[in-house]
Length: 494
Image 1 (cartoon, helix red, strand yellow):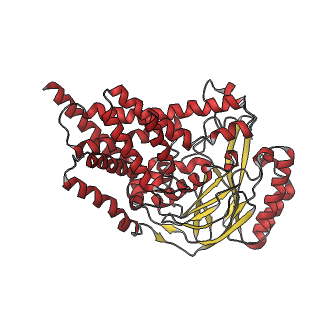
Image 2 (image 1 turned 90 degrees about the horizontal axis):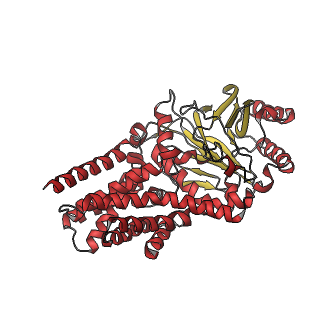
Image 3 (image 1 turned 180 degrees about the vertical axis):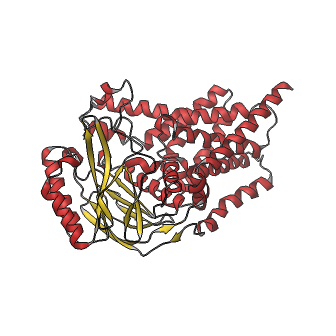
């Protein structure tokens, strides 16, 4: 079990800021080898659970920062909450390896066929982790490959397709180490791995219109004062100054840069931004909450610009459990934290983008960019699909931790899947411009006050992933598991 937990920690090390994509495959290879040596199915599940604990405790420990340091929750309670959450997440790899062994321990399976079943089980269960109970797909194995050869598959099959491929490759390596891999299967695996590089050179979307000048603002407002009166006053003054200090075709602030309800926006600030827009021809997207009635709150991005009548509005669609909606029976838990939390209204999945010059900008807020299927659906169902994506977030809740680099890596995957640039405006980092090929065009240092200025080219067209979403990857995985199930039944009948 300790070795399995260590392999889980190695799995975490494959993600940003390290970008060791090969370690993701090797850690899964080690897991598969340990599971195959487990004498019983429950022992196999135990190995998978230990791997999951190592993976998630080392990968999302920063949640402790938000609950204890900024939420004033007692340290023991925050630590216990992280442990329990990691324990829940660890059930998923346990389920994956249990299902793999349950399906393949009966009957004669070739090493390559068993490896395919391992990959299918791992991908389908990872998809479940990202969807059940609103989902938490953070540090999904596919994100480790934003700088590896499998990156070329992102616009074809998305992050879950990459998970499927990587897990099959790990299974094949495990079989090869035991000298049970047929040379044809080994060649096929090598071809699949290497083919990602030329695929990455294919442009699935095309430039449209002229590039626009963009300014992304990073106010670096400390989280422990942001929602206190002094912090609110500082944020209002700071971001008003940063927005209006120089022209740009598009200016974007972080999530809740103005930490008040939009209805409470001081008239002088609203007038200053409107005057700036009218006098410079700039467009502004800024984050604020809204209270539309006594019980109707939204986490939103608002926009003003010369091409939009009135005020543009995007309401966050995928809300954060415990942060933006409180699951039934957990109000006592939220009440233990000193945070401005509550139940928000969910925005529509498909909301119109904001026009800026020749481009159309589709905002997403906070961890909404973890859900590639939803972003893909919003593009394919839109009357006029966006040509750029814009993520506004505030990761100051998690301090100077790996969460900032991990989130940038996630945004890079969304750019790859959609073939569109991703603009990231954050409070403390990582503020960045990501090209459609997933590379970082420009980035600000974290925990600094600054403005990132860049010229960004929008794109049009739909990648294969945007057209069909996760259906091919999850469908192939489910089909493989179904075939394995039928084969197991037949083996039992004989």
